[in-house]
Length: 404
Image 1: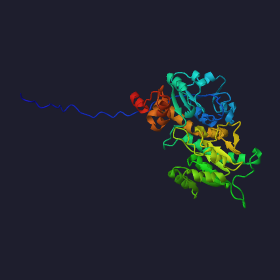
Image 2: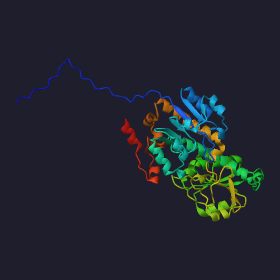
Image 3: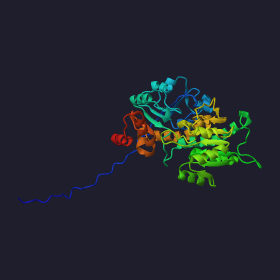
Image 4: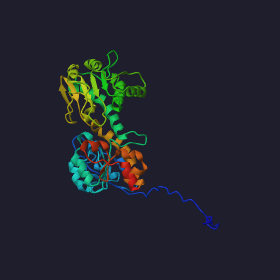
């Protein structure tokens, strides 16, 4: 059988198909709700009036529960002048599509949530409950956590800002409790000409440790830093720009330094679990009477064996005649600065969400945001939470790819 050649007509033209590009959707108008935080010790508010005026000027609606900003010294008038609507019923605030909170979602909040809401809030792994998570999953909530949110450079901007505030505040707090006004031993942090400087020990060379060291050095104190990471100690030396006394955490050296110090700061980080406890009760009992311990790590269990959680209303206790300051959430004691820092991160994120046509599109276009999402339309996308509570984990990248 003879084979015939394929016939190609000159009248036909063959063209390659055009590439179809991912076109950004139209801008979406948002309705944002900011409830008043009733949880103990929370004075911050996640969006300041300045941020809200930008959001409202771009055509979005913001509803703020009455007195939500009082802890940070923002009045209802400040918010209404910025263009927000002041609501007197918490239920109404929870009608908004997007909720922005400065405290974790509570049991009471769960009752008010409705289907497919988007929530931005802290998560506080240590106190998170399985019931709350399950209720949020049932209501198909999409949730973004402060702690895990990353920016374009791969850093956690809100955690970083809160750590800077806590670190800078540490020396001010220590100064308060060394003074006679608070029944301290009457020592000025830093010291003056002719008098040896106050001795400060910092355990942990992360952001909190770095800012505590900066403030201590600026006040004229003698600062010694302990950390088990040589890399972190080197980075801190480079950032501060001077030679500092640094050491790995070696119990004998640490105990010797604690015996003669005036201020000891616990600033160790944690990798999702409890902070390592590196100072024993015996080490604390050998410290000078009237010296001050500020345990910033108390949010994750603390790194002094004698530490017990205290509150902003009753911040200190004495043990072995050593003053212990163990308030979790130190930035809440400097609520206005902390609120401005959180707002600086969240306002551009919300504007991005609107410009991209909703959170789903932002997650698709901005991969760094994905690390902050722990629930997506009711599916648990945070591996640590799924391990901790034995709940089904779903990979967010697969979820996103499946929706395209």
